[in-house]
Length: 266
Image 1 (cartoon, rainbow, N blue to C red):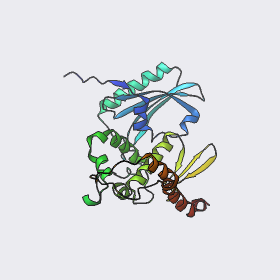
Image 2: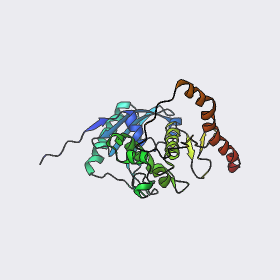
Image 3: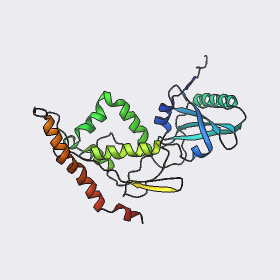
Image 4: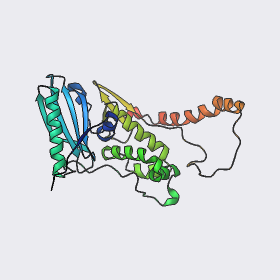
């Protein structure tokens, strides 16, 4: 029987960031520069080619999922004199590891993060936008990205999933977006406390961030079927901008201000 040919494909950096972005340490940018990204056909083995900006040579890293479903490095080779040498080693190593048939490489890490999409509440309590996100085929790309984030996510409150699936959907989705964005910006995230939501660090500086939204006052969660109503006139829109909208934004900001989050970090 002829052995099955193993192929390695180049990976777009955007796809690489979806799969591996949460695993990347911000410290890596201090000493290296990413050059190329690779994957096997089913994306169970990921490879990255880098320039060592300190020693001015090249290194290659092979990654696969650990027991918590996070991509982690498990095979690394350094000090290649040329980029081509590093590339050759990387592709051959990825083929070899693919050939073993292993897809999970336990590393003694903590279990994966919370499962957002398995309902924990009765159907009548589920937020309609959560139901769409969890079940509608058109939201498959969004679900895929979120599922790659969640193995790394720390639920410091202990109620993130329940709120995400119910009346807190809007606020929790915004918090999840900020978590992904801050990680993509290569900031060090401290999630060891419940409030404020994020403490980010870099270059010796720290900034605390509290996630807040201007939520719906009425129709929350929104109804699928709503009675028909005419659109607002231009005058009504202008009036809302002068009075109603400032109140909608000002109320949650003032409520957050009264909690004096800065004192929680002292």
